[in-house]
Length: 294
Length: 322
Image 1 (tube, chains in turn brown, blue):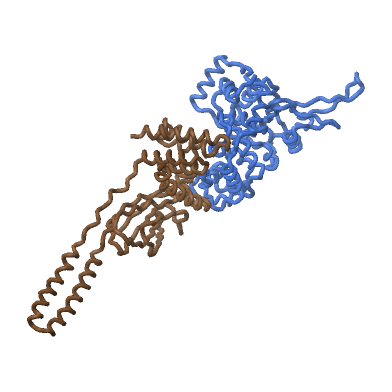
Image 2 (cartoon, one colour):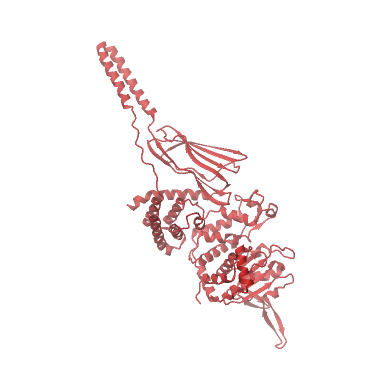
């Protein structure tokens, strides 16, 4: 049960860590980020109809390219194309990446934020920025319904021609049948909107409880590191910061969050003989922190 | 005596107002078996800090004022002829102490600096044909005055590399200066009492040596040193606001001795914090003091009006902590 509960979080943190470490290997640009957003031109995209996701970044510097920008994972969508534009002027650079995608099934689509790693030119520190995430609902396309109606009409016309050749009386009867059959698709064609699933909103407490469950179930160094990264991310701390940086953030140097962060740091960096005790301590701290959240 | 490093720190803090960086540097040097180079204006309690440290450890303190006419024998000692015995006798120099303050080290010529620095490295000196081991623990705190460059000899980077760390000493804050007034102008100075023994220091050193440094931290340390050798991707802002490549300001980066120094200092800082494992915070906290005297900046640092510390901070910030 615990494994079933924790599997999504483990996958998420492992994927996140892999992405982060890959981008960390590259050198970071020095940027003054003024805006960073993810948007779409279709909040309710139609099934099989392409639509666009747009990542917009505005920086104060004049740059010819933007490195270390990670696009969101598009697990529920098919990627059709990707177009980038960079416009620089005296006030800075506007970067815009337009991703063309298509949904093949109705239902809710959750798109994680895009991330950007750079050195913040304001204070010289390496940071990670996040866009907003997106929650879309794909609906059945009216075009699909129309096509179904057209097919039915052609079939009805062929029958009508055959019946006219057979006789007027029969033709009248057949005509009545045809008219009836033409009405049938129209009745069928009324689309039944797919019920919208409830929005995928997780609370911070759920994240903390999942983290505790993951670490409690898999007491390894790698899990401790992944949980540490997930907790840091959940409180808005950027990767590449130190514990001191995180504790300096508003609201982070208070109990029991402070004890949780310290315990997870110990789990990530202590020696092997101390790892079991460190993870026990971290699980207990996560429990206390979870209970303190309302 | 079985004291802890925190006891020593608390004892020193009772005498020295502020100057946290100097006190921490002295303690880290003790725990790491290294030496400290201090750069700052005169009158900032450097002598008092060294004297207090020696007193708190029941150790011996010596101060050597470096001058242009100083000779190596004035530091390490010499052999003099004893007429009564009709034989040469060895007189040990002031370097034979547990805590040595080498004041204004750059006022002496290179051969004198070398004599001191070789003694620091080898922990023994040779006088005549005999070698004499220096006491253990043995910490040298050398000072350089940045305001007064006349009549000074620059320390070669290869020699500065022998210092474990270089600390920039700043003026005290207003509140600290008021405390200094209260403590010293009112003749309320408290002599430092011994809180630890030299044997305690040797035990702490072994504990510091055993502090665990995780593989991720080792890679972080190596990355921090490596970026000083290849800083093409690092941008530095000059005091005038111009953006420059850090690589253009550097002739050569830090040596592998910096890598070792970072690991030693991180271990020492972890022990001072009561931990037996080091954290990224430990490495980052000691990165600038361990690197700043080991990087060969070129003339552009001055012509572009960039502070060396700003360039170092930019390089440190460019490496994400694990």
